Amino acid sequence: MFRMGFRKLMEPVANYIQERIEISLPVLREVLRPPGALPEKQFLETCYRCGNCVDVCPAKAIRPLTGGDVDQTGTPYIDPDLAACVVCDELACMKSCPSGALRLIADPSQIRMGLAVVDHGLCVRSRGADCTLCVDKCPLGPHAIRLDGEGRVAVLAAGCVGCGACQFYCPTTPRAIVVHPA
Image (cartoon, rainbow, N blue to C red; front, side):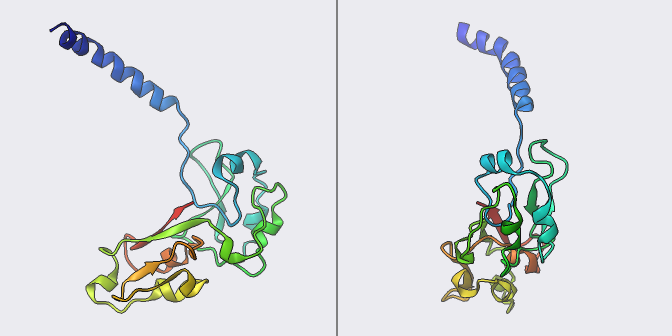
């Protein structure tokens, strides 16, 4: 009886404290970083926010993050709904980074920005359409994405670099294939 009364009395206080703690903690958005990005915490500490990678990106896929968390403001990111990384031959963004926040990865197949995940319930192939845009537009081709034996889109984790081309070209809304940042 005493426990129930005490719990009833303390519950509003505990809820109030929990709300205040959650509000005061910084909330970092999960974003897709350009190729060669250091792990997020280290990336945020290292990036100069100079915009060099934004300026040299031939696909215009890299953008500076605006709004939201102060620690992330000005840092480069990629939104595959707007433009995808093309894993360019120049590896321009990595080579232009003066801080080392984007380290050079000479072998494009070793880049790990994220991983594409397919929602077969949204994919038009599951409804009989002959769409292969995500497979056709992938800059790494069958090493990263292909059709499986049942004709379904299959992402190969060992080959997918997370460039976002599949997401960019996906014709569904919402997208049937989405890149989750590494």
